[in-house]
Length: 261
Image: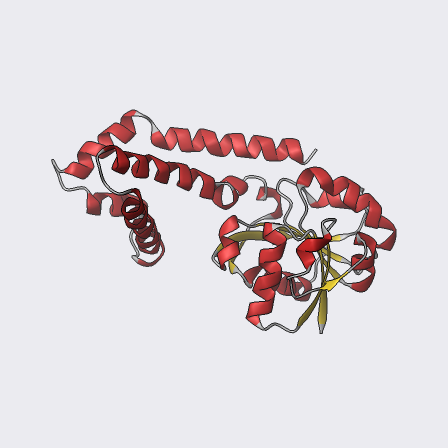
């Protein structure tokens, strides 16, 4: 049986723990959180401190806030060995950062998850370098995949991908807010509008992945010449919506590099 240590049992850490439990994988989970009450309802073996987690487990999931990670790593460094495999979901943190605070040849798998993994619908980017074996990477990917899909990206693009899947749920929610607020403004029930728009997002997402059409083809399919959709699209183009998205992504990436220093 593999042992997985989890440091940090907040929303994302707890989501992964619950995903593992529901998947039925043969994994024993050891966990520590400074707020010990978080561990009471989770299917884990509670540990007294971070170091105890590392001593018990080959695989260690780092699920703390990026700003707290340096202190955590310095605390556990004496217990880290060349066999330890870190699985980090800390946004903007590089493998080099983790090694600089532990040991120079530490094995690191980087993950950029997103909050829908709390419902088992996560979309996580994952990467590693040559220090991690195929077997170790496969295990790490199965852990993250227990609560959604995973896609492998180059390890030097893990900061850039944050905007694509990590931060983008917030952008989608903001976009949705505009439609729901408009519905209320014109006298449509907010709950009905939310359900209609949310299901439209679900269906549109499936069209993106399963229809075989390009994004441009899908837009054209909805856009009858002289119709209502074209009228709305013209306003979105006037506002440079794709340019705004690009600038939002660039701001995410810039902040990720700042956090990783």
